[in-house]
Image 1 (cartoon, one colour):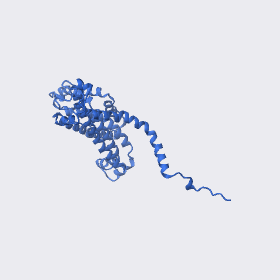
Image 2 (cartoon, rainbow, N blue to C red):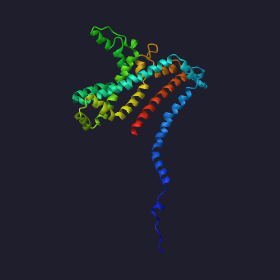
Image 3 (cartoon, rainbow, N blue to C red):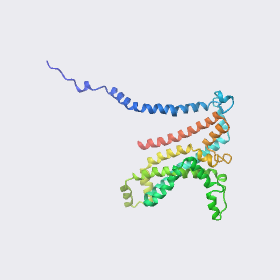
Image 4 (cartoon, rainbow, N blue to C red):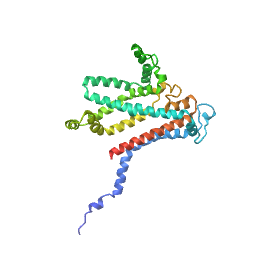
Length: 307
């Protein structure tokens, strides 16, 4: 009597079961990170979101036992005359100090260092990175010492015969934008230096042989090849700049008046200066939504590049 050997199909596990097992094996290592993110990131966000719907304060009876007030904090916020000023200042601060300033200056420095000799590149790189490695509070005091009425800039202008200018009082937003661009440019410069080193030299050499000028090589060859790095760096510096607090608070305190008040400064003042924790948390929630909108925009741009 002959025994038939099992066919390969009969010993092969069901495709659906194999797929589920493979998915479980891939998901399990991510479980600890997912739990940590839920506890330390999602949890505080949920608590903060709930706090924005309460009348919590730093002192008084509502500090001990706050109550749910619905959308009252948000209604009051949109009626507050300082809120649109803070929104406009935040957009200007992010746009000109991060999206334009740090990106453009960082890319320009990376291109210059690529074509410069080693000594010049090392000196420029060291000077630029020094501002980035400084703690934010130290960089803020250094920028304040440079721009204050009797600071280094007015001293230099006085030596040239020019009248001193009260930079922090007359042009507060421009000054904090310059200071943040100065401090954050090193990060963009290092990111773009790494990206430019990955551009194959034969590609630019081929463009040169075809007669392309330096500007055409930059816009038609180099920038398209590092466009994913540009999108990633833009997202990082945008989110970092959106939460900048110490630099502005040390240099101008959000003033004069509300001339340099951004959303983080306004949230701090309402929550800890005036004691309105629920109202301040509502401002922080608006800032979170603004950051989420920027993130979705950049992530969609990166996903398009991957496709």
